[in-house]
Image (cartoon, rainbow, N blue to C red):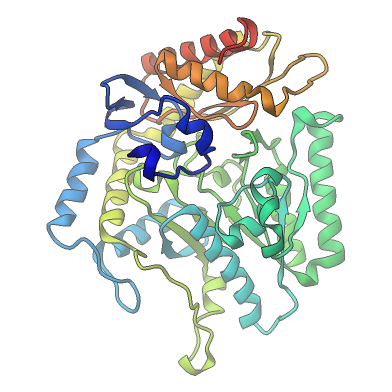
Length: 443
């Protein structure tokens, strides 16, 4: 029935249907179990969103208790208790100034909201010319039409280009692939942004950025200081800053939010994934009072933000998000990420000198290992060689699940992973890479 009826996301179904499909039945801690009873480490946090592990009693209880009250009621023109409590909590932990919370159900919809808010913000203020957006090369912000319009990964986005609005694109500082290294990569990014703002700020509504770590492009880590300089340029030239923290938020980078690493307070911030601990689809777009006030007007002015989702502010999702944030506090999870990240860095150091490991990129517990055909020239593997896919399949054979980004092997474990579990997972990662890149081709 799986092969007959399910169409899987980001999956070539011809390949999938010719393979031995993995079907998960249950989870416990950081382990997932398939229908044959085989166990696997969840080495990419079920697409970067699991925080506390699977089947967590406190999170299960939060959902059960809320279910005994009400599962859902609309947030259109009325409120509910968990949504109010969660909004207050989010305002308290996000960068200063983000005082208003607008809920949605995924990172992509949260980005759509941020884009539309930025656009209408200027419209409501009577500044009708600021309608364009700046994004960054190889950016990924989700798969809805607006989110794809500010996306810049050709493989994912080019086929849809005729149906999208155009955006200005500046380089993300990819030091490993820049001939000038880290300093020149940063300089080129800031120079491109400065030039755009100097010449076209009057038509630009906002810059959207994945702060500190660009995810789907291959876990590209920004050089220190780049984000804060970008934020200063936006302020100087009167352009809103949208921080897409869907992947980087909730402790993943070693801070609660990546913006915290450089004390950046954006005008709009999108959060999701880890918000509910990986349990239910809840996202949020946070805005400053200044943005909010541009929509706050008499009814007849028609400055309302006409946007919403059926499950906006869903009680079950908000309840489990509150329980998740409580676990963050009780277990001091964010601080714990720093020590765990250091352990992982030490473990993976053994791979640095291997002939097909180009670069190991890490910020907190977001790790990307770029595999190359030739270490000296940094020559890439051809797409058809499926080097990342084959490495991930080998890891699966050895008992760990992950998903590559082209030739980049991703390791993003649940934040609660113990040192022993991290030790076991990094062993599998190393064995898989060495087997595929040095031990001969595998099918």
